[in-house]
Amino acid sequence: MAETILVAGTASHVGKSTVAAGLCRLLADRGVSVAPFKAQNMSNNARATPGGEIGVSQYVQARAARVSPSTDHNPVLLKPRGDGESQLVVDGEAVGNYAAGSYYEEHWADALGAAEAAHGRLAADHDVVVAEGAGSIAEINLHHRDLANVETARFADADVLLVADIERGGVFASLVGTIELVPEDVRERIVGVVITKFRGDESLLAPGLEAFEERTGVPVLGVLPYDDPGLPEEDSVALPPVGQRAVRGDDDGVSDEHSVTVAVPRLPRISNFTDLQPLAAEPGVRVAYVPLSASLAGADAVVLPGSKNTVDDLLALREAGFDDRLRAFDGPVVGLCGGYQMLGEEITNASLEGTGTAARVDGVGLLPVRTRFSAAKTVEHVERHVDGVGPLSGASGTVSGYEIHMGESEPTGDVARPFDGAGAATEDAFGTYLHDLFNNRTVVDAFVKNIFEAVGVERLLTDEGERDDPYDRAGTLVGDHVDPGPMPVDW
Image 1 (cartoon, rainbow, N blue to C red):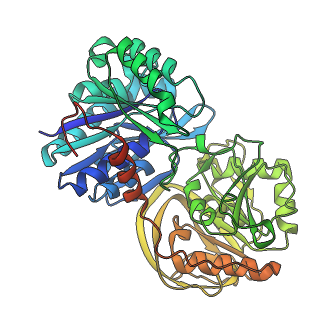
Image 2: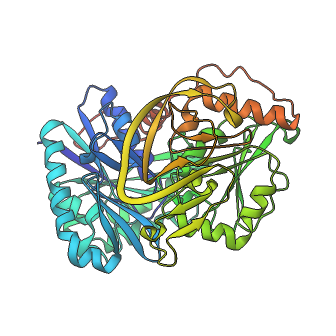
Image 3: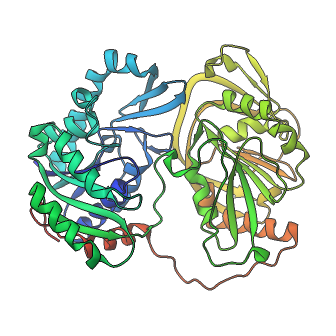
């Protein structure tokens, strides 16, 4: 059976996913058979595997480990829908929508069984399992049902690597408090600590590290400098809160006069926003997440992202008047998955989305398509030929990505079908169910080129050469700054 390392955290967004991915790539490159694992994930950023959908971080970590992503890597996925309710996905398949109390009372035992079985299969097939915890391992109100942290540590007989970030201050208090509050049997499993997101002179941190080790007896195995390898974000903690504006990609060194802005409405139930990360990584492209009440003045293009509840987010757009501003917008508009559905003329059978108010909802009306919802859910990886039209004019060749959606969209009139008969496009608008669209070079090049040309801004093309692999960057980050110490593997 494999050794298991549980990468647990003092809080959300402390760098667990990056450390886990780095460990996976580092061990794989050392010839170790390694697999990622997260017993229970809560995220609306999912990916399709042959067996169903899993959280984006485990998909990424599987690629870092050089293994095919599998539902065993994330057997339980909770996808928040709003109002305290989440869609429960077990072994890749959607089970239903449940409030937290109902999940814990009626389904948690089954989820635990699925997680134990999945880990058992991975442990039988690999030398090391790198498990990722969720949020904080010290949530004392949840210890009796903490599947991703406490239960994983126990059923996997795991060594625990505790991760804390120093960016917001209080790192030693977070670490000491976390170690104090975890159950005693789990505390005994903590083999070391990694501090992330450090800026400055590490020698100034040394007295604190020594005092921490003396107080707790837990060694600090590494301090990671502030660095973003470029891995996809797991959850909306990385986004601005609803009602606030934030810009991504404005740190690329390109001046404002040589830049364009892609506005993205900050939907209350936004999902798969990692679709926008490749755009923000393009030199001269600013991705601005904007409140639904915001003006589109200053925007050069708009992308409507995915949504975990398309109808409720469409109604939120309408209530804020964003649909009127979108119809008046003079520039390219792209809708991805739920955003594609919103751009159509209508959505029927909408009560299945949980609004309980109507069976038909008017769309924004920028695309002549109609979407009808049903209980069936599409989850698949796809490859299609793109015939670039509208905002993607100039794109051609084979593109790949994945689809995760409920409902099907059909044209109501003449419309271009750019993906082997799928999707819809007019001169100024484009919609598709294909996630990871902008990870395809031909698509992102065409879209960005068209935006620059449409607004008459000179694009400063740079000879960047081949971009660094984010998995290699994560592996190097961990390998260069973490001492394996008492962990069961050595690099």
